[in-house]
Amino acid sequence: MCRSLQASLFPLSGPGALGAMRTIATERLRLVPVTVKNANVLWNVLQQPDLREHQDLPDVDAEQFARMVAARPVAMRPGAHGRFEWLIYRRGEPDPAGWVSLRIGDRSTTVAEIGYSVLREQRGRGFAAEAVGALVDESFGRGHLRRVRAYCVPENMPSRTVLARTGFERDGVLPNGATVQGRAVDVLAFVIEREAWEARRKPRG
Ligand SMILES: CC(C)(COP(=O)(O)OP(=O)(O)OC[C@H]1O[C@@H](n2cnc3c(N)ncnc32)[C@H](O)[C@@H]1OP(=O)(O)O)[C@@H](O)C(=O)NCCC(=O)NCCS
Image 1 (cartoon, rainbow, N blue to C red):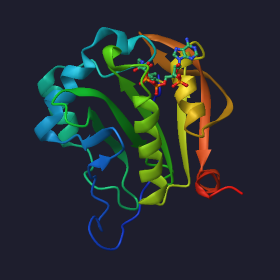
Image 2: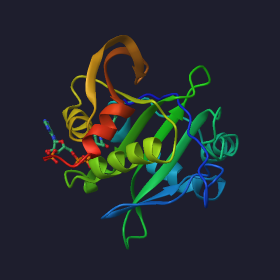
Image 3: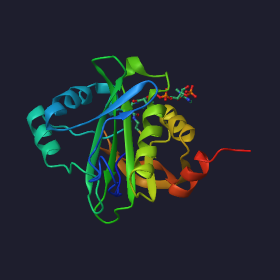
Image 4: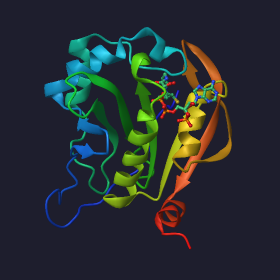
């Protein structure tokens, strides 16, 4: 699944000082913030039936979805909580390849939960790992998150591989931790701490 999270990001100095969501560029991808203007693009992506196999996604029509997006926070400033989402585009391609999200809970604004999906025809090329890695960098690099969590059903091996490749570590099992296709299921918990992320970035040797 990759349910959702909690955390909070800080204001920077200079552009983006208020922690506004921004387009994140990676080697092969652009992560474009989801706003009311492009909510319908994400809604269309969410209609792909196989995306619901391992995770619980909103079952609402396009208008309701746009209203949900409109109610979200637009800047990841301290204390902000809610869902932040980006569409994943391959550079130079007009159609989205998936999405990646951070959810910040209201009880702890330094802990976030990451979620992600890549459309079937785009899988197996490392796009999820590239997008998740970039969002973890954004969370710790521009934000003041202390911890990013992820959750995944045990049988979702591609998702587990993505998390391992991006530095997440196993953090136990959450019994009945998610609802998938209407059923409560146990989920594996994963976590990456800010310190571990910093250590990964230090040059070795
Ligand atoms: C999980 C998901 C996002 C991965 O997207 P992706 O772009 O294909 O991911 P990546 O290419 O970055 O990595 C997938 C990795 O899983 C590996 N993998 C694929 N099937 C696997 C399997 N059955 N067992 C073990 N590893 C597997 C791939 O080899 C790849 O690893 P590699 O790059 O080291 O070769 C995609 O499968 C998806 O959207 N699934 C449906 C929605 C979903 O489950 N979202 C996550 C909820 S937690």
